[in-house]
Length: 376
View 1: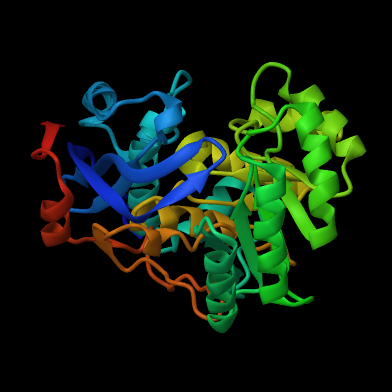
View 2: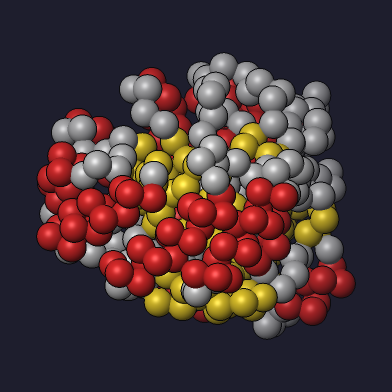
């Protein structure tokens, strides 16, 4: 294939998409997502797409994202995508991931390969097998009865794994989990996610109580922070439920620190938080050390969802169910072509690059400002 030409234009546009229903988490209700769509075009007309959409707790405003895109974009104009990838040291993961993704989309497309195959080659990983990627269903209701209905609907759609947010009240969460387990029966996998809502004592008590519901995994039982590695290790040692790090696993350095002391049974990797190059390195490290990775969105648009799916395709068999089924929780999308769950799993199309196309009419609906950018 012909290498992509020099970068002629880096553009971005802000968007804001509400969730269809508020999602209760241990960190509070999530009601809306906002971020930037990034579009990079080369002199020969090739286009790469990316998305930057940090969660509110990460402290990056849309204005800050735009300022960062302008700074990084200015340095890219006139260079080839191959020269620009990977971004130099000093990148800001949650802000620069949109540009990283657009560059990777261009580079994979210029090779005529799906993004997953191009990423595998970059990381020295085996080519991704064609098998569908299992996904977990996220249950967002608050009451036990509503959660039970959601669990039954997930089973009807073919999901074999569901996840429930916990962390407010142990007794109330226990009633919710009891209802979900009754609806699921004995075969489906039930995970819980505390989003760091507990201290160590609360975590140990909650995990002991929730084990009666045959919980397969608890994500982030304690707060992230400087003591999180040791705290997770102590909780894991006392817990009857396997432990995964989520918010405490935001970089390759974090992952290595966790694995070096056997603090977790699995790790959650969110590419829109870690950045693409970092997520790829984390997948490679965890795979080499035989630690399960769960690739997860941050309630992204179809761009971020498809990116996470390409990375999940790199996981060795048997792949764990990944958090890739959240797009329907948004009130709409800004692209076409994002893979959707079928019988609880996603299959990447055999198309070049990322494989999604911008839906200009949908973007106009959700945009909160005009396109801006830098050009040659």
